[in-house]
Length: 149
Length: 109
Image (tube, rainbow over all chains, first blue to last red; front, side, top):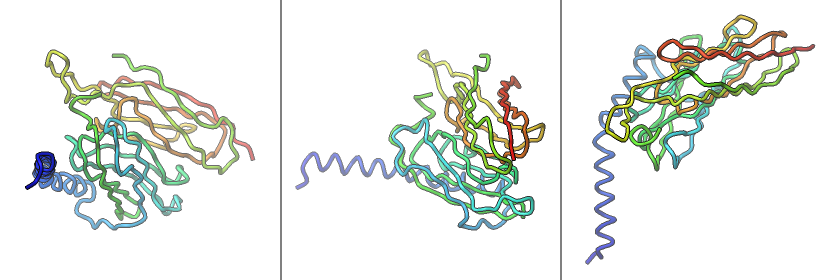
């Protein structure tokens, strides 16, 4: 016989899993749609982009996030834009950084809000028209948007 | 609400060709429009939508902001020291109100 405590933990886990699953179906569409909107359906390659974000964020109101892209950042070969996209925020588009050869290197950081535990995608757009991306899953203990600032 | 002051951290001097790191912070609530106050009234959206940096008159960096950016937007980026001149930092909110900061850089070599 499971103890009362085990039952409660099990129940909570099931409740949490079903809460996560249901929006997940929509969320995949949200993030994929946001990517498609920027790529126009072009292939997105993995590699070159490194999304630096904590695996666990205690505070979803401010999650320090860094994106670095391997690029010589010359006039002939550089990163044009870096998009940060969210799977479960009310608005999937978090931010876009517009860069060019004058940046010298393709590395940017900022603080972002995350409304739930979710996947975050960094999508880089090169001057040759190719797209590269990295994605990370992050667990958020205190979510942003609803209660906090 | 009028836009409050901003802060920029960057070197005042650099050698020509150096990549310099710039940190920019502005005090702003970045109110999402999704929150309610204590009486249940919706708090209207109030966000900074863009941050643009020019160096000696030429745009070198631009950021598009949405409510997914935290309050008091903070950004770290870089630029190549090309010439002695002024960097101008402009944050613009959704109503078009702008806050402008200026920094001088002396480039040697």
